[in-house]
Image (tube, helix red, strand yellow):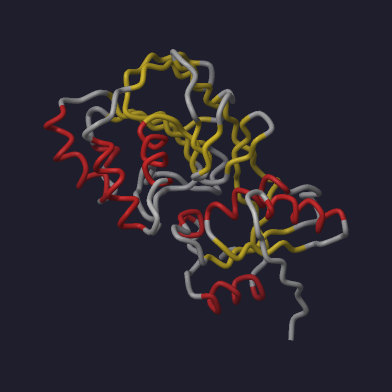
Length: 259
């Protein structure tokens, strides 16, 4: 017995445009029925944060950010949270005029997404297969990271700036992340011998990436990554070209129905 209006997306960034229009018309609750890609579009269309709340009913391919907020995958259980809980603050990331809510980064994840884009039947198994193939054919990235003003040079698999804990449908790239702690998590995995990659992958899948001696992990408020040459940026599974990888945490602004 709750009134609602359903809006179906039909093209890329349609959810962003719908969100912009609905909030201008006076909507006070935007419920995202989808996965991380839909969430990414909605957060980029958000405005009037003081008066508008977000709800999540996860039914996408990955649902990684919903998992970070402990929102159940069952539709009725997710809806119960929206109907019975009070919206609370959740962090998001700002990169220029682009917002990210789960993971922002460059390096191996960009190569994985490029492979995954060519897959006809998209699912978690296919994503993992693309990751394994990329691990054995990847060139390391040289970059400099400015982490809260401290400059560190890297030759690395990845520069990952995380608000959520996982991506790719359950790969825990940043297991220590908490999207409600007012902090970013920065992860870089330094270059290692190819043979060591074989042992590294199971540990990555089991959430032990931070235990590698090649892994560096920082919590921070801002990260600016400067690469030797222009590269694509992965924001919540969407690829962006020709943008600066300069990210700040935004706290106490977005309110989401959660436990």
